[in-house]
Amino acid sequence: PNVLKGQGKSKEGFSVFAMFDRTRSTSGRKCLKEWFLRPSCNIDAIRARQDGIELLSKSDHTEIVRIINASLFKGFDIPSLLLRVKRVTATYLDWCRIAQTAEAAVDVYETLLVLRRRVKDKNQLSFLDAVINRIAVHTMRRVAKMVIGIIDVQSSMEEKELILKFGLNIELDNLRSTYGELHDILHTVGEKVLKDNPLLDALSVEYVPQVGYLIALTGRSKEFVPDDFQFAFAQDDTIFYKNETMLQLDSELGDIQADIADCQASLIRELEDYLLSEEVDLQRTSSSLAELDAVLSLASAAIDYNLQRPRIVEENVIIIKGGKHPLQELVVDSFIPNDTLLAAKGGGTISLITGANYSGKSVYMKQVGVLTFLAHVGSFLPCEKAIIGLTDRVFTRILTVESCSHPQGAFAIDMSQCSKMLRHCTFRSLLLIDEFGKGTNPIDGASLVVALIRYLSAEGKLVRCKALLTLHFLEI
Image (tube, rainbow, N blue to C red; front, side, top):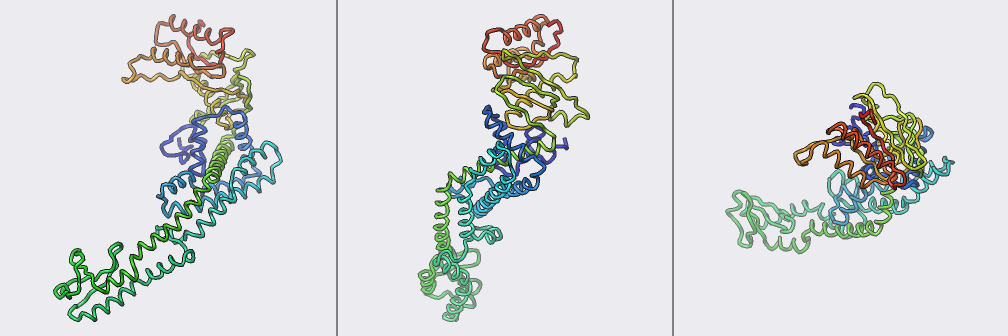
């Protein structure tokens, strides 16, 4: 839908991740993707993310958040840049990005210090301190100063090649000065050679990297080649020669372009060695900024969709008041909020859901699964209130897809999925089972559902997990 147009990447499509992805940096997006792929069961980590979202979603901090987002947008993925430095494949653009990222990190650090002076809540202070303490600001300042001090960033971007600043190395400065005057030097030498050889109509002296200095003859001049000219090579209608003067230039000026490249490479190696010596600080800073970017993204979604902070508890419960499916709500004119109560003293609860086709049973079941998942990412939820107990796994038997690659019918696939659930679920798991038992004799189907319910609710069993089942077997 158009409501998510421009959010996430083009290949992401209409998804929960695209709905929550407002990251400003590549590393931030990778971090958020990692959180979605591997939700946390660490209650302290989840609460820390929630504290960050609560802090950064306050209206009082809108301007500071805008400044932080602008700084994060200027940064690049430090691990990828360091990898290219290690492989000695860093281009002029990579070095410019390293300097820009280091400056952006310093800007974020200083902005967070301003924000910290405004915060009073202990938990929110803990979140800020965790981010601030992991930013190696002194290292980032040194990196920015060294890169900008050695590399002429503006000239490099304009010329699209790595250009070092003048004043770093006397030898390099002399070589570059000579190279800048090379055209005039060769023109003067050419005039002298032409004067010494009056039979020639015209000639030019050219510098060819890795070959040296050569006399180029074209047209009628090729018919009156002096005896002291030694043939080098021919290219199209031009013939190149060496003579004593050219050999003297080779000796005095040398392969000047290669000498400049070697001298620059030596200085860049020193810069690379310094960066790699600070790799631990750089990686730690990158990780901290990526997590900050991910939390800012979740905070932005919380503001836009009016999400509420769930309470994460150790108890094995799921209690949701006024819950909504985050995606379904965006594609319908009106969405009726639903309550969920999966809580029992014994540790497990099974809810049976029935109703007419297209009444919303599957959407409700998916809603519970998505909200439980988002709570473990650390996100706020579309609900009035929620208490989510730690859940280690969410198993689903909702969609059955038959394929030629799976020589099984729909009923056999359903049985296989439920079998895997029962083998791998724990007392903290959440099972979502949609119309299990269909596709066979109604009596057999109802019997299978009853056996499944009894197995999950049997007294004394370790597996007394939370489960939602939709069915049409009213006799149950």
